Image 1 (cartoon, helix red, strand yellow):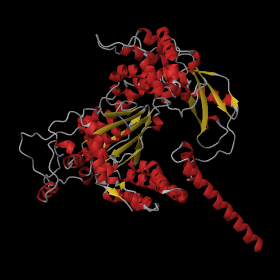
Image 2: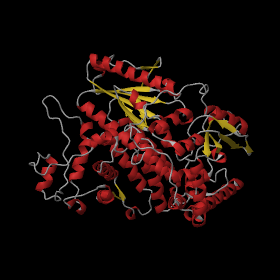
Image 3: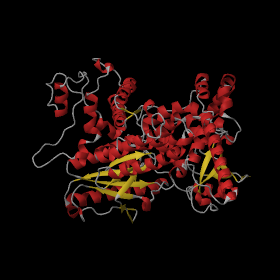
Image 4: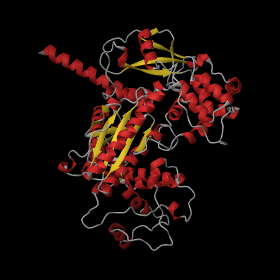
Length: 628
């Protein structure tokens, strides 16, 4: 007994000393990469360790090269493309200046990995003043010769374990690192390339473009669904999956697209060189594989790759003629609004099948095929189950039936078959609670500032992803999310000294930020349908809702001159407006905006709203702070 007691005391003492050392280590490394690595590890979010060594480097290199290939493409003819209209702008070359090179060098991220060329981004940034002249001459020479250096086309690949048997190459995904000078050269030319190519990207593509993101697609989805249900209609969604996507971009096909949009002369020759003779080698288990050639795909980790992929798939939306098409990079979603009768349902199913067949043929023509077995459908309706039964038949694509789901995941947003976003809100709350539990385990080792920082980074970021999308969920779901923030505040030793804006105030602030973006005309595609409309000052004031009338009687804030029109609410006999619609962004936004009382909105004329966005958002957040 005595020995056991002594052993327990020694273990307890060692554990306390370990905790103390860890606490000191976290305090010293606050906010650094080491801090976040330690937080992930000790919170249980650092990922599991594989038990077996990876396969030989040569086996991995061959497997990755096989994935990045298009068998049989050599003899295939490139389908015809419609050329740019006569007189349209051409891109014949790139202007490379010392100022442009200097700007890129000084903006480099010094924490990026050193590439296969052995050049560190830190050296380029810290020595920018001395290196800008020779690098400008080098880049100008490459642009003039229109020949991308062969050594710059070799990627160093690190295999990252995914799951299951660690000895099989298929259970690893490649992470490529390109030569630092190659990516720097691409950064220098990127502004000119983007300004030319973006005008040729269709408006329903939201991936990798300025002022766009997954939230744009989510907001459009939520708005289309809420409006359809409000109009007593059904919605059908089909989420499509490319096979290989970025690894299967056909080089000759991409060059044909570049030529079709007007890339000529030295610029075209540079891309011909860029998309040829590429290779990779794998570093794994202390081994370096032989170099293996790759024959397709946009280079992983390259600066130009996202925009080039958008260009390669630019004609996909043209094949969708009957449904709405939402495109984010390689994620394609079709949306069809349908009247609630059997004839309309049959017609919609036929039209969707025609769209899907055209997309299937596109994949065959351009060697970027859709994975029909990984495409899923969803029917959204608030009709009774007995009325809905047998009305909507599953669609077909490439001879395969598109499987119908109860819940469909699109860009991380969970869409349920009732269209009320309850499943998304529940999943968000569940994931946030798990992260909060990890933070709770770490809390004894962190001071209040670190707890607050980790909460904002790990927990609140999860809660706020898609917050404007699930805003239409029932109040009970939103209260569950609020409870998570209150639980996080209880972890603080002095919660009264930390004021966190409420989640609702942050949602309102996000809505105001989106309004500023739309009012400045920066919305894209279907997002422009959500652009608020100002009240005409020459017209008599419209009928105000009860909340506005009460505010006026109680001496609320003065109305600013930039009032927005309210969204229509159904008051017809026999029809009542749905709560999901009344909680939607379209309905909430004008009321939030019209109640703002910031001084900057008292100006009679405002050229742009984006410059004042932060001021408006901060006012909302300050008015909705919560503390322990």
